[in-house]
Image (cartoon, rainbow, N blue to C red; front, side, top):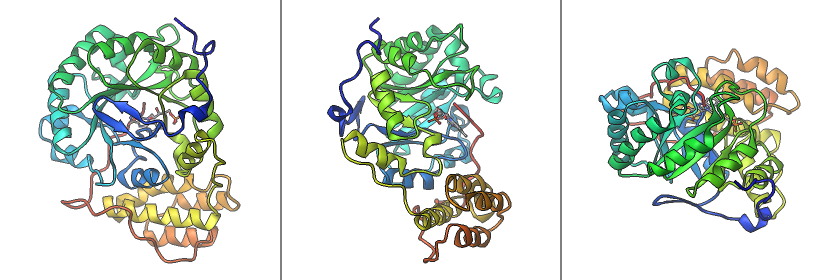
Length: 363
Ligand SMILES: Cc1cc2nc3c(=O)[nH]c(=O)nc-3n(C[C@H](O)[C@H](O)[C@H](O)COP(=O)(O)O)c2cc1C
């Protein structure tokens, strides 16, 4: 196999504006927001898209619950008309559940259905789902083949580097999934055993890229234009999925896009504009979940925006205790110096009232 390092990608400029073709779906640019349970809610996704994320994915939901008609689970798959193309992420370990859930997801208007094979959380892996599916590529790909045959929309899969250091089997898994008809892959370059420690292995992501012909999104530790260029150069991937690097910094998509086009990155917003964004996100999360649940979600989401800002530590101390919109508005006015009007919600209220909280997850 050709080493991706021995054969680096051409300069990033030649990739500028690259669309990624995922089966029948054209993703208009190379940057995706990685799914993050508890964080990548609809309001956050809409804001990330505004800054240049070309593909967004829902937080993961249970294929079994969806297939068995669970209304609460179906309602977790909320999306916005502006979110296009958009993927719904499922976890599951049964071909019938995944097939039925893929049909439901397509009926709900999603463009892509993504299967989680990266989640290391025991609650998910003990049922054979998430990263556990990487332990038997042959069996797993048979299951996915059935799902692909049943699915009206392209099926993609998000995998890890492997299970542990002795089983870094992402390239083998990728080949098996490609044979099963999967239209694209996202590869988080850490093993299940690593969880989030160490650094994502870009050489291994590059091995996956050279092992298959379907598009590959590289994932792990991309939080700046230079990290994005490094991912492209080292792994030669078609696109990049950005998770934690976009938390509290959705403008990172605009910065990376500019640099990939050979332009200077726009500066990070002024502190008061960061404050305005926090309030816009808050209004969106309140619109989706209702004030009580929303403020629990916002404690962490809002804190992330303040890293590196003067007065950020005080803002974060306050975020731990916010219980109401008024609490967070006060914190933003005091520490992030935004004194303009309360921005409107970036999303419409969901039909049927406030959404339930998503599954705790990981990948
Ligand atoms: C809080 C949190 C929740 C996550 N939830 C999911 C999930 O629901 N599905 C998934 O495939 N990956 C999930 N992930 C993994 C991320 O998508 C991504 O693979 C990982 O964070 C590495 O990329 P990053 O360094 O860009 O964050 C989650 C990660 C975090 C930190």
